[in-house]
Amino acid sequence: MANGTYQSILAPIDGSKQTPIVMDRAIQTAIHNHAHLDILNVVQINQVTEGFATLTDMSDGKTHELVQIVEKRLRDLEKQAKDAGVESVDIHIRFGNPKLVISRDFIRDHHNDLIIIGSTGSSRIERMLLGSTTGYVVRMAKCDVIVARDKH
Image: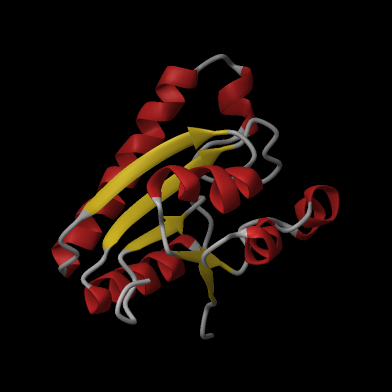
């Protein structure tokens, strides 16, 4: 953060019902700060719940097709951000553990100074088995984290 404003914002999204909430908050924050916006989807091979990419997509060996589907959805979100007035937007697809990619690897590579993440995109069962990605990111990220929540 320079001069009290954020320069580079990361919006990790997963295709859950939290995605529009995260995008709205990230877009408004990017516009307010004249910041760059990175929109990230982390494809997790052992994903239990539905999102942009699911376990069955990966197990069928359709990785290329899966990436094309995720990229199309991310392009739609990129257009949404640009149409709303965000000047600089990039989309990214990564494979791996979302906790580590979001809290450590991505921000190290892209120097983000703010992460805006949904309160949860996982089911109760997934949180019990794998733990909360949001909780992990809040604890471990080296930059500021905003947890975007549904106001309803």
